[in-house]
Amino acid sequence: MKFEEALKTLETLVDRMEAGGLSLDETIKCYEEGRKLVETCQKELKSVQARIEKVTKSGEVEEFTA
Image (cartoon, rainbow, N blue to C red; front, top):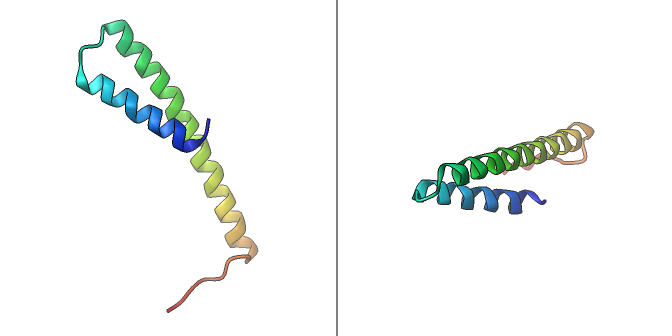
């Protein structure tokens, strides 16, 4: 699942839980799925951060000064 898809699904789950009306079991299932999505997003962000640091350290990106 791509970051954007995971984030959108997570937002939908949060909206459902905030709206109320879910049973306790449904709320727990939403929470469990949300935790997995948070982990997915965090892993992707860490990967992107590592890629940015690698490019920056290698000098492939020059700083722009105005």
